Length: 242
Image (cartoon, rainbow, N blue to C red; front, top):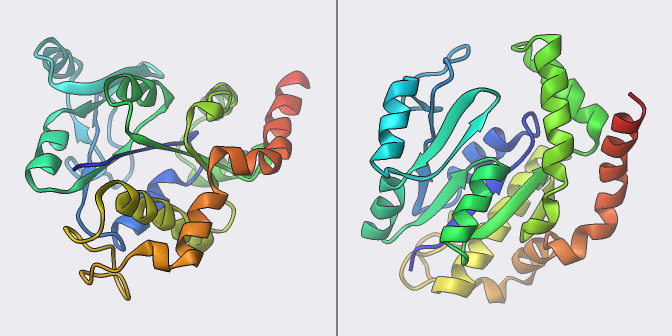
């Protein structure tokens, strides 16, 4: 059985870095590269970070029903092609989707069993610093992304897991723990194994690794609410102070 993992986060939360690192440590994980109508940034290459297409091409794909989800974000289309799910099923892999809040809602309507993970920055100030360090966006765009982050964060209760990306290595470890624990609980390990080191291809059961399961459990929505309060407050206070 293919498990679909949805990962969402406000722009600048470090989602792409986390996803790239966890893909190196969790095998048998198909990754969906989104299609977009925006222009490439910096060293981005077609087929690596995104598939860059024209608005006309994207809308033709919509008409043909080729997307699992799609959305208009800041004037550009973004979408997940259906063929990635088909490929994951054919190869008995799980599917990892790096998509925004709008896309996540669409996927959950179509695939209610999908596992959803929301990544948060430690606070609003940290998010703003990360956006500025990228040095890719104008002041207007940065403010627009911060405003969008405030709105997106309001949807956190719709997700199964919340991961606060404070320390990168700890966050990678937590995300990996979520993926491996959910994989075992839903599909077992005999078919695919779990990952590098003690898990790789050996069919070991994460139920025997209480540390692995505990890391995942700590990120469940119901177990992280208290930690979220100051983070949420930092966004609310900034919005009310403007």
